[in-house]
Image (cartoon, rainbow over all chains, first blue to last red; front, top):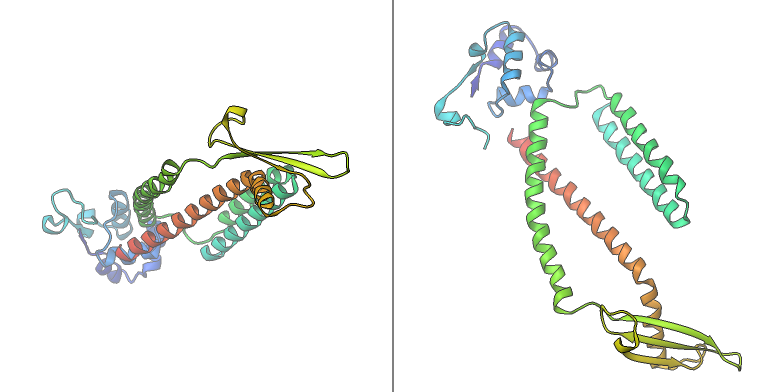
Length: 75
Length: 192
């Protein structure tokens, strides 16, 4: 799963700490997501999209080649 | 309060409660654990409430659950192997014989003792008797009598030794669990 969190955050001049606070997670979670190391749950995905005021598909992109048929990219 | 301070506070409270329980068991005061354990839990919960940082988030939960699952897998397999290896000693060389002793006073003021050794795992009945040793005067034992006497004394402390062994096993298992979980937690924390 790819995401545009870093770009959207930069556009809104938001720090990782601020986004973490608004999304109700730790800063480490935001860091991991920005590095594409961690795929969030649907609930958190929607929460982040809501913080940015955009649709979830504008934040996250599902890629079959990366995520595999089951969507399990964290083995 | 920071999360790290909370962890230190929890560890110190747990050590204090464990020390109090240990002392009370040794002193035979069984009221102390009844007070110390709930008090310890209250202190830890109060500390947890004062943590300003976010304790639980999705990623942390996932990392913890993955680390816990891997720890369980490793410990179950390693524990099963260790159990079979260690228990095979009991099967291959059976249980130790049971030893009983009886002290009686003699007419000349000395104390004599009879030490009986019974078949392993059998009740202390005459038909199971393997060896009987009489010590005429326990204040003037010869070498072989002293060896028998030591075996008897040791037998009387065996129960305490066994309890200590179980305690050490539980303690070691706890340490292994914490270390394994910590290792997996660090691994997944780096991975995600």
